[in-house]
Image 1 (cartoon, helix red, strand yellow):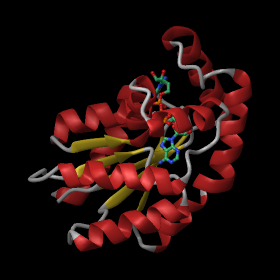
Image 2 (image 1 turned 90 degrees about the vertical axis):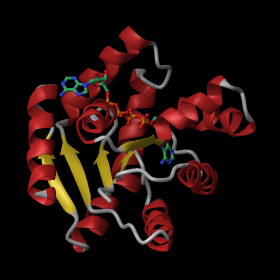
Image 3 (image 1 turned 120 degrees about the vertical axis):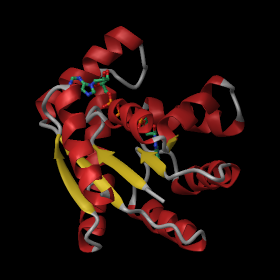
Length: 191
Ligand code: B4P
């Protein structure tokens, strides 16, 4: 199975590139950001709690994310592989993901880390804030999200690098150029 983690700072293009990857390779897309936004929309318990964290630029607690993630993973079967988008976001989640996939005998094959300059990340997120109205895309929350990314999420790169599974992708270019970088890497892995 082709299990891929798409990794990067907020605004690095994880969601954007995931949409293109699933179209080309027919993988099952699991985005914890999208799942949590759905929960918020449906006003579930998880949604009500998540809303507080997300609106302040904080991560939703690991335990809650893992419970929901496991439930979603258990509902899928017979897929060619997964694209994990914006997940894992902490070392705890990365270890929990490995344990879940070990049970299923289908490990993460590659982690694509999108590297984008901070100025460009902020520009993209502010643009989305005005166009799509996501309420975590405002200057104050973006600053917090970037701080938390550096503190809690970035160490995951080292976790996958040590396992020989980290592939760095230049993420500053156009959507098409970044996608070409990712597809070249996937095709080298698969063929
Ligand atoms: P996410 O939904 O994962 O939010 P994100 O990191 O901002 O999105 P993404 O990176 O996918 O957006 P993209 O660059 O594609 O998470 C939201 C929140 O949920 C988190 O802050 C956290 O609180 C919580 N959460 C989610 N998962 C969690 C977890 N596992 N544990 C705990 N908490 C969790 O798009 C950004 C913009 O850039 C778009 O407008 C896009 O059009 C544009 N863009 C993309 N690529 C571009 C390019 N190459 N050139 C120009 N513009 C581009």
